[in-house]
Amino acid sequence: MEKLAILDNIIFDLDGTLWDATDAVCYSWNKALEEYCHEQGIPVEKRTLEQIKGVMGLQIPEIGRKLFPNFPEESQ
Image (tube, rainbow, N blue to C red; front, side, top):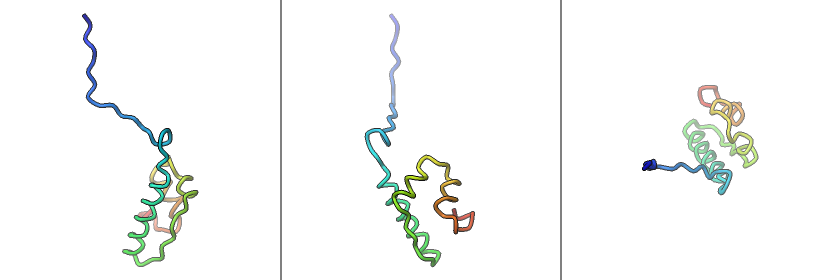
């Protein structure tokens, strides 16, 4: 008789299917940006939901260039 494989884990990616995380991601980006700007002594320019939606799925360097074009490259 053939043995069935036993699964230890299942990964289910529900973001974009059952749940839209964009609001939470936007909040998190703005919170981190607020802390960074406070530490650097520079004014905070919060990012909009549309700006965040525009970078969802991109690689980190590209996100930095799009969201923080005025920051030094090493800070993007």
